Amino acid sequence: MLPETQQQASRRLKIIAGQIEALQRQVEEDRYCVDLLDLSLSVQRALRSLDALVLEGHLRTHVIEQVTSGESERAVNELLRVYKIQGPVEGSQPAHNGGHHG
Image 1: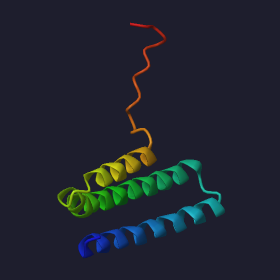
Image 2: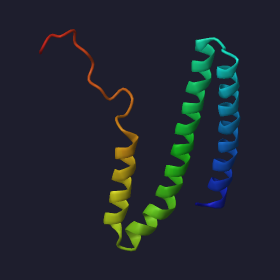
Image 3: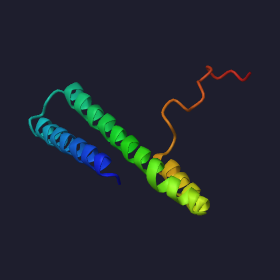
């Protein structure tokens, strides 16, 4: 990981850790459900942002190295692994058409 990417990732993780601690306090204090959901969704967005940062860094360094050194199959396999771990992309499901078949 490039030093700049590592610093950005570390900074984001500290923020996420603070959000998780706040979420834990809200649960313990039996806060309003929507408040919990707001913070939980914020944490999830922050994690997705961290994922994007790490993935971009990987693409710009390791994947390029692998492809230029003849290890393109390894690069493809790693990217497929990340894709499979991610699961379906939000909004990728076909729209429900009310049970009518077109």
